[in-house]
Image (cartoon, rainbow, N blue to C red; front, top):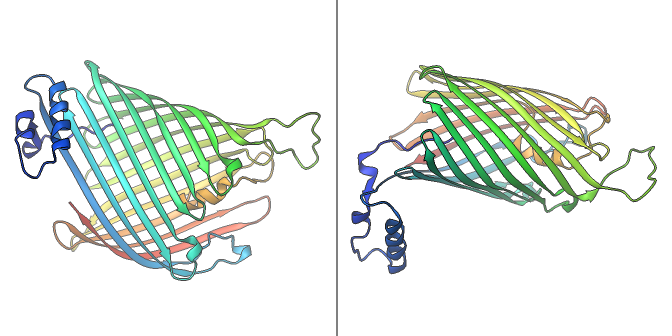
Length: 370
């Protein structure tokens, strides 16, 4: 959901202040600022805010290659660094917000698992009536290394806020996913999403969402082992859907409990599944200015064909879409600097073939915030 900029006196900038000549402002940048101001209503004021977070960590990974236990997991030492930037700009009823993230991960021995990932998102919207906004959005992620892929989303949305406690958002978008390691698992899809959020008060809220998409892959369908084709094979087509509901509490501690359902119906053998996921996340302040954050999830999957043959599994290992328990302990060292200690355990098992995936990670790191 959209987050409005906080009213910050220092962040309010008038067009007159923006176009004051300065030796540190390049002529081209000054021209763009002047053009933007010319398009604004007379007397318009801008509210801008942003944040930057830099973090680095080092630790151990019990399963660096993301293998099943039956094929022999390889433990290794790992180091990572992450940069995250966010910004928001408001001109009267016009809003723009964006983010950019870049992360790198390196292993001591399993260097084929080294990876560089980048992600960016931009959203612009305009109020067209009281409580109604129209907007455009774009979102992308690119991963280089083993399991390299590019994931792109773009489209439009309408957001309706009939009262301060209720928000409704509808999105129509195009989705293009390219899996460079196995191009036949790339797809394109139109998608539609609906999200509803209701705040009972400043501490309690509920949220529900639904999503549907029709994916067309760069591959032909796979027949069952005992199947015979009476004609040319068709292009692989999947119907993807998801729905979920969650409750959030914000008070002396934070707590979010959610349930999600994901289904994929495919005309290709071994690509269909249904997944139920129950998750709990939260944070609490401890003595000595410590902050404990946790996330736990239990997941139950069903495969109508009895097996799951998709290369998507190797991608889900990066997102750790499995049973999981993650803990993070944060100790503020100063206003902008934190010391962090994290640990996580991820597990899943395929009942049809008995294959088990298990991975444990632990790291210590620091983060700097602006």
